[in-house]
Length: 158
Image (tube, rainbow, N blue to C red; front, side, top):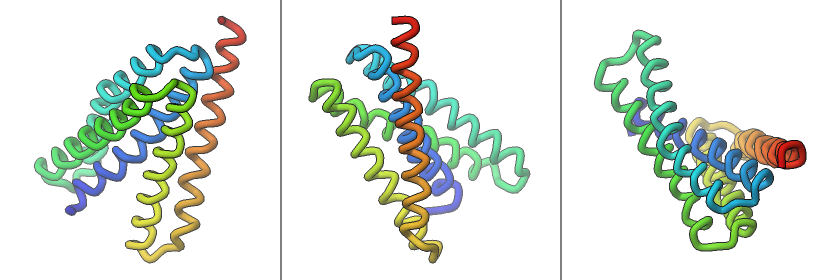
């Protein structure tokens, strides 16, 4: 896998997991609505995947170190990976009751993030469990924060 694709792939996985889980947990805590969570996942899969793709595109252009092909490879890899990861969270929501689907999604997201972090650290000859721990800790903070904010919004406006 070349550098451009690797950049988009790793960014897309990480962003797809963190943003989709954060949105799902927050919407669930605030609305307890399957419709809202499904809509949120679809919006992340479309709008945020395009946004992240463009963000990587502009970031790579600003470095003035990549060919046009490399920039577009990073852009496409980011969009496709973010879209696919976000859409993967739709499966449990469609098949299970909402609360169970949120729990399954959290496990799925943390598992994918953990495996990616482990493999990346191993390839870079870093301490695998340190990388896994750092990345999972950030994801868990996001999960707790969005759950709290969703509940707070429901309490104030619900």
